[in-house]
Image (cartoon, rainbow, N blue to C red):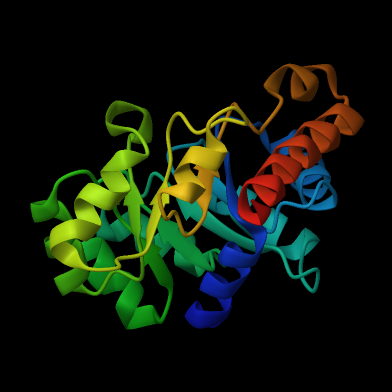
Length: 217
């Protein structure tokens, strides 16, 4: 695990958090290495995968010392949070607000980003001790929803996820996103199935370039 402030700084620096879902245990480490080489600085292995804890531990070992942070997504309850933290997850992301998940992460000093859409969910998450808010699913509400949340709540830190692509990533950063989360728009699953890590790396690099362009405008 890594200090939660350092984790947040790395996610911000990366600008993109890659969601690695359903990748088999034999492929997860080469994929993670390719994503890192493509410039992605934060990798999220989903906790609903088979042997998720083992995958997180393997990726964490592989990328130790590289600066890339490894965490867990789709964490639905406190028991799952405990499991992935024990495996070495440096951050925890949920698609919803579960106060017990947030409190578990706080107790262990682990960065946590629960999923919210409504102001009520956002306030509940913030009061429970969330580090940032994951706006999910972003495609349902769009970039303007970041400003809609910030209107009554102030400059809350938001990571939109779900529907963010190369084509619209600039809109989310223009709206005030801290960083973005991306799965299939960033991770080339066809290339993974073909065992082509060069294409995986190139896809990641292309998305990272789009993020860098969006933040430089």
